[in-house]
Length: 245
Image (cartoon, helix red, strand yellow):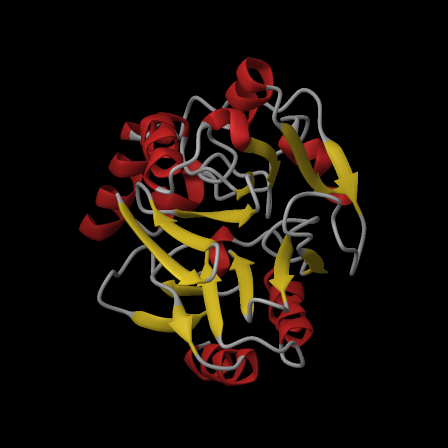
């Protein structure tokens, strides 16, 4: 696990090939995503490292409902009464009522050694054993969510139907989830702002359009769902992502 304070009270945590974020507001904490199901020890360790306990975690906000982001949500909800939030259009995915993710057929079609490593790591981290979030609160577009830190939802559909980024304007932080990442999941040497590969997107064309929602936001650090934080204005990050394709 790697943990870094990217802005005052905002911590980036690198778990198993995916990231989550801790937002500290006084004594309270909001968690944004939580990695894979088997990252739960990293979740506990990260909260401890910022000198808080799981009792201080008041809410978890999901950028989207894929297994590598909602990993510990249901456990924290049941065991620690953590309220779980997602965009209203993401509820069916968070609950496991629908699937909007890369299929086994698509993985086989693109089969290469590095893709095998990606699939192996995903399975090892619990990718085939998602915990469904049975009770979730919702928020809408461009809404300040009523959780510690009050992140503002930035609706960016495409990766999934209800995907959202989160903006912390007072901290200068933009959390982009999988709408914009900084490392290729199949080629770890390909780094920098980029779109996730089209095979992972529910609607790739819409994912490209959704990048526009980031361009005018004021921030100087971007925290993606995969890859290291990137320092610079969102407009520049989006331009680089469009160049890469």
